[in-house]
Image (cartoon, rainbow, N blue to C red):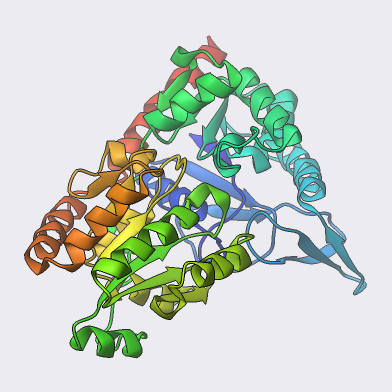
Length: 402
């Protein structure tokens, strides 16, 4: 079967877990004899051999460069050398036009679109081809807004329209499914839960020389390191982590916090750490890739994901792969599948502090969590998710041809 896959990013040109999930899911599908053409809104070399990658942009444009993270503007460089900056909604409209051109040339059996940025294009492709449309929801606008005021009304309208008109909606967790029903009134029986996972073979190995030599030196002197890796946005709940960190540092002064990532809350979090009087114990690295990103997981004694509303959350699984146990919020999709970890409500900073303190003060607890998390990690696979999708594709293909 031939699938038109619409996504906003792929590794190594990704800002977070969405690109990783798309990559690994498509890799698993390709092993099921699924022919995938993946369309991204920019030009780049992805070094991927298991599917075709197409760049959706105007024909007179030579290059499309991302300005930064996924939710940002794009820089268009035309063949004449002219440069034009386009905001996110303008980029989505350009992507839609390019996808319409693609479906007028090629034929596909299924249209599969990831998150709101591609939904307009997906609806246009469905309109032009009358092929089944599967929309894959990795997050909804209220998640990204931290549950405050529902988020951007334009994005909400795009999400609602796409989910209503799609043939099937995929949610990355039961948590996300409930959010879709609550926020948009989509019938529950139209939504299929397909949990994210990790492909162990795609997790790049560590080497003996860790980037964070300062932290390793401090650990040799009895310090412990707690790590968070992710976007510094309201959705991720970092203010609560810092408030809990203050309690941990009062009880266990030899605790350091490593915060990896960038986002609109970066300055706010820097100021909050100062106001709480814990700046000496908190290190902000900014956005990282590659070895520095991997080593951040590995140097930690505990990984913490305190998200307010996390549709899934791949980072605790990545942390387990690099030998670091996790404390995650109960308001996350990964909490539905990850057993060997600590869990707390995102708002309960007292309990968050209690659990972090217990780990940094008890090496036996840390090692037990680490061993059990690694054992669980070694069983991870995208195979089940790919099987669910192939069955879904076949069902909707047969319905159209009947």
